[in-house]
Length: 382
Ligand SMILES: [Ca+2]
View 1 (cartoon, helix red, strand yellow):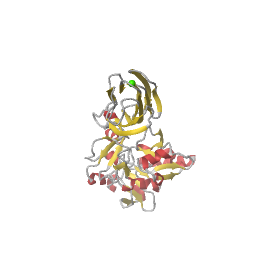
View 2 (tube, rainbow, N blue to C red; view 1 turned 90 degrees about the vertical axis):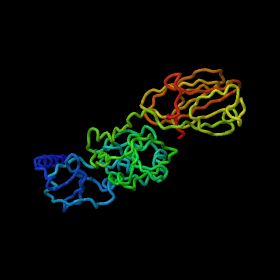
View 3 (spheres, helix red, strand yellow; view 1 turned 180 degrees about the horizontal axis):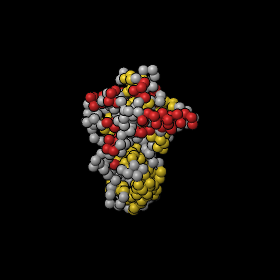
View 4 (cartoon, rainbow, N blue to C red; view 1 turned 90 degrees about the horizontal axis):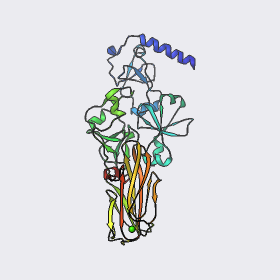
């Protein structure tokens, strides 16, 4: 192995001394090239280097066929510096390494994120998720970087998708959906339609990013070597001025009985901010002895400790990501409860339960302070 690396080093060194023939070859960044006597295909990158596709499955995460591959002389090929290997296109295949049972999604620049469970895989990719998985030899592992698991149920950056089979195509970048304004702009990125994911709008409602109107080189750079602003188009994109989400509220389930005995009706409540006095929330319920569950997702803009405050009469329980944060399931007059939880940026499940015994009935959900109601645009029904 050491001998091989030494040889590689010497070759790289010799190659670096050779004159650059790109002009004579009239190659442009983005070209695919191979030598006449070899089957190895290279990508000619924006860094002026050639980058090998180390395996056919990696090639087919980027391209559907070999139509665009140009054949050059062996000498011309050898005179172009050899850069790093091409990695799987972000958001395409899921990867399993031969010696590792985990299944990984691939984000830009070869960041691997493991999928925690079969149910998470099915939520992200549907029942046929296994058809996206390819085996990768351990030898390629060194090209990639481990990025841990997903923070929440979102698709990897680079995923191309449409909502519920609708006509518009989007690419997901850092949690933002960015629409391709035309098929022309779509075609210039040579995204393969094989990887377009149908995303259920009810389960995933991504923040709306800027439409893709002008050519963004980072979205098509197979070698992923760009730096600066162009790189940020792919890696660190965040919509300028965007600080709020696109939520509409939580599912509200209203029951007769203090322990969710009989579901009477269901609605979407834009916030949890109710004072029913001594009355009933709805003509379908009695004024006493009812219970309500609000369920959905809450969106956190950036990772932090979040304190939730609830002002209620009577009892409440609040769970975030199935973990109890507030638990005061008792009869009581109006009072404050609070609980703090460390949350990552993104979406978290929220489940708020409330019951009314008799008399006054009131419940309000705040965060950060006792005067800031959790706004509806951070609350999602799913
Ligand atoms: Ca009461």
